[in-house]
Length: 168
Image (cartoon, rainbow, N blue to C red; front, side, top):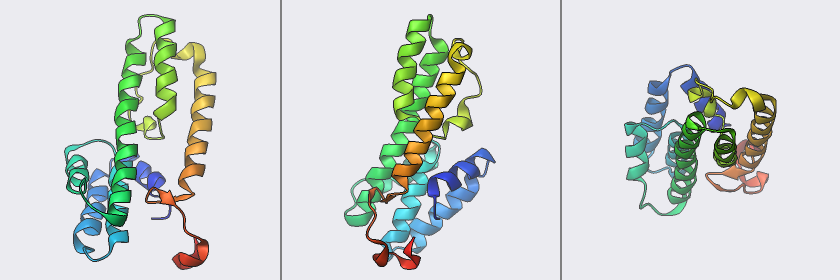
C-alpha cells in the first residue's frame, strides 16, 4: 500500500471495513516472519475507524519490540487522534454559544484528519458562520498531514531511497 491512510479512508468511505479487516488479518497472521508486513497491517489498523476488531489488533501489539513497536506507536497515535477528534466535534455540536464552539474547534483542528468525512454528518449550529474559514483550515491541515506522512515509514523517518525497494 503506497499511501495506506488514503486507501483506508477510501475503503471506509465505501463501507468496506471487512476488506480492511481481511487485509490486516493477512498481514499480521500469515507474515509472522516479515516484520514489515506486520507493521503494514498495524498501520492500516491505526488509520481505520475505531471498532472492536481494531482495538484488539492494536492491543495485541502493545508490548512488541523493534519495527512492529514503532508501527504500533504510530498507529496508536493516529487511532487515538481520530477518537479525540470525534469528542471535540461532538462538543462543537453541543456548544451553547459561539465562544464555546470556537474553543472546541481550536482543539478539534489540531488533531483531526481526513477520517472526519466519515462521521461529520451533522454540522454544529455555529458551523455555517465560519464554514469557509473552517474548511480552509481543515484543507490546509490535511495537506500538511499528507506531506508529513509521505516522509515517514511506520512512524519513522524514511530511509534513503537506495534502501527502499523500487525507490519509493
